[in-house]
Length: 100
Image (cartoon, rainbow, N blue to C red; front, side):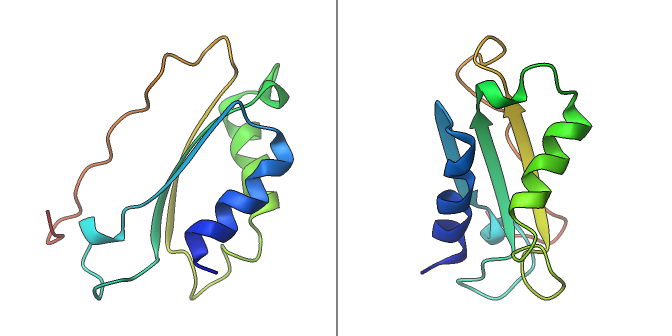
């Protein structure tokens, strides 16, 4: 199972209305086919009343194993409630020296 699939599977515990996990490793200076940099966009009513920091803490707690040293290096999180969701999340920038 790929790291991306594991992240997707674990985040289903939040019963998301929308979940997108993108492997953005190709935008960074890492070997081809790496799974080190991810972007998560998730929409869940479980974020109601929680500020951004708390939402991130919830996700970090779910992905504790994947975020251990030597595994996922970077995780961009865009966590929304259903009323906040506008249908898209911000684009991630390329890393200095990264690929296209």
